[in-house]
Image (cartoon, rainbow, N blue to C red):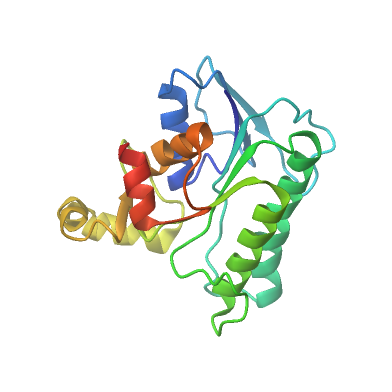
Length: 219
């Protein structure tokens, strides 16, 4: 299985990359990044692409799955900027991939509370919902992952300053909280394993809430 990964430098992407490289059924990981990560592996091909809206220079054919882990926080952003870096950015990659790999599995990392109706009061939730819907229209094998809190594992680190501070202060409590509230907390390891599970064997719903991610990641 040949996989393309977006966002390998982020916390979720780090976890997903690790699981892909460990999986015997994954033969190649094409990682698209804005800046080199320094990670090397026999199965990994990393491409530094400054403009994530333009894929005309790349051969994207022959891929079986895409794990799209790029995302930004809406805090402090204008509606136009958030839409551009959420909906427009995701669709630029999705449309480029759909042209040459229409049958691939495309997993989009969304978030708990996303609004599939696109009509709710919360702006970010509407934008995420619009993005999910667009991905699932493009790909029969399109899925949306909606994690809530995520426990970083195996050295994964958040790039978002506020999240990193939170993990530094409260990270010690996450293993306990996961046992008490498994429907609300997943791990980077479970995220990666769940994406691979969905890519290989599908899932009974195209939207996976946090509890589904945990279940898929443990199967």
